[in-house]
Image 1 (cartoon, one colour):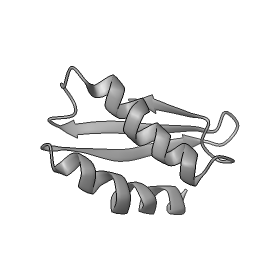
Image 2: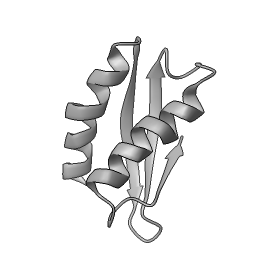
Image 3: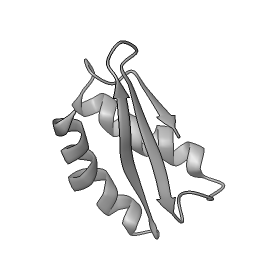
Length: 75
């Protein structure tokens, strides 16, 4: 999970911070390959948060870690 968290912090957080938001990895379920995240700042209440979650965050994780991440859950 460290590699995933480091990727999120170095590649995804800078993108979201340009819009006043961020994301935090809160957990990982290896049996379902689901990454739990928390949207922060402007992303937390944004009407486009679903698009951000799947179009940006999940897409980047699937590209980088296809064998580890099959879903993203906002908690």
